[in-house]
Amino acid sequence: MAVSFSNLGSDAGLKKLDEYLLTRSYITGYQASKDDITIHAAISKAPSSEYVNVCRWYKHIDALLRISGVSDEGTGVTVEGFASAIEEPVATPPATDSKAAVDDDDDDDVDLFGEETEEEKKAAEERAAAVKASGKKKESGKSSVLLDVKPWDDETDMKKLEEAVRSVQMEGLTWGASKLVPVGFGIKKLQIMMTIVDDLVSVDELIEDQLTVEPANEYIQSCDIAAFNKI
Image (cartoon, rainbow, N blue to C red):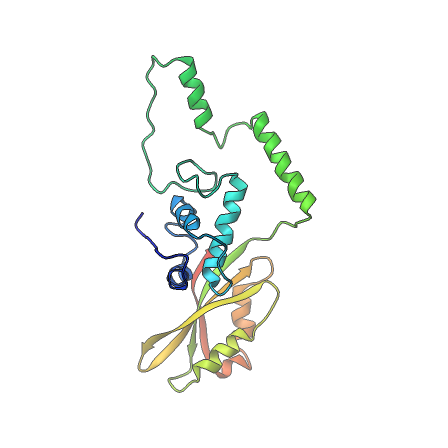
């Protein structure tokens, strides 16, 4: 694995992971992989809400593991919804293999696009019944967005600028971690994370109707989307 983290049971380790996930949805690549399972397993319990990005990622990976019916200890198996961290060639079985060997291969290789077996249908029905019994409503899709918020000049009060940004509250919007980034000539911009429910929040409308109009535009000169990732 190209990326590694240590001391994930400590505040320092979680803070490092939180900063890493500021602009990422997964540990490596653009979809969940064995790397996510490995890091998930290294965290002994659900992280504090203080670590916004780690909490978002942890809940997402936890949900994928529950859907797949595999614990995060099962890093040596193929898990539905997770990409392999390393692609491995598929060996062709010898022509002299016995029927028992063929049966074993059938058990190990799952055709995700083939017809459902009776066992798979039964498992799907049981999951659907469990969700219905729990009374939980299926959540809409969510996205993680990184905004670049720029002040008018180097005399703009950046603390009040951030307060103006966070004062925007609406259903489906959660503000996350932030930091100031130098852009030159003594001017700094605010980079801030937010998590949105796609069906409830339009980022373009948020910028045009909330962040670049009065009273927020007293401090905010412009606002751009730096990164946008589906969760």
